[in-house]
Image 1 (cartoon, one colour):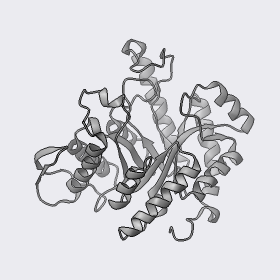
Image 2: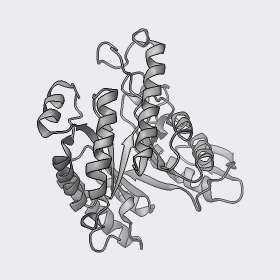
Image 3: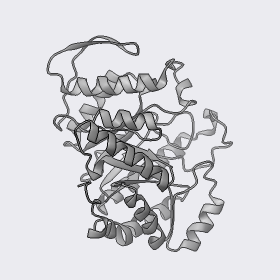
Length: 330
């Protein structure tokens, strides 16, 4: 199994009420600058400690993540993350130009030496309002955008793209991705029709915040549909993301989780090393090969300590024979 750390770039200061959108007057630019600097430090340390991936995401108009453009943030990460893959999890296609996303992701793959993986997302309803450009069919627009990006990366000649969702007279992406035919791309696995789309397009499967029993159900559907399509996903093609509250002991983690104010994102990874390993084992049994941890409100020093603990007490076990891919999933 592989372990990923979300470099969230969260605002490390008091930001006021939780209603969206959060007023810009609540953002102190100096605090924002320090916050992004601390997140870069965490990403650098995760890379040094042997984490397999460092991930980024896209959010708007709120202090949770100061990363409205995850590709800009990922470009900064290439300067401090020298070994781990850089995972775009991910650009929101419903509010972004898919050709621009294809260009920037290919540029990032070249800049990073071929270390990019990508998940292109539909987003959540409040994000569709950001640029007042919500498509009538958000799922259809997202899936069409993924098809367009994959063709843009692999088609050797300029081409036109005219569909119900996107209209481009000419597409001719420079640079091409360093990885051939293209970086590993994931599709959402949070609904059954999205699972089917990912399997039919030979994409990886990314599931977030779901309980292990639901993960197992969707992974089984994914593998069955992939078999119908004539291929077999590898272990790295099943990704799971959840919030984490990591501490030296279960009691300490429980205490922090009780007072942290996670909102609707209750931590799945919550505890000391042995409990966290048990939680990872449940995901492994469900078919997950990559675990992406989004640290909850932990503060900078606790986050650094959590990275050290995970590297020392969790990551070696994840790489042991006990966590080898289940039979038939190699």
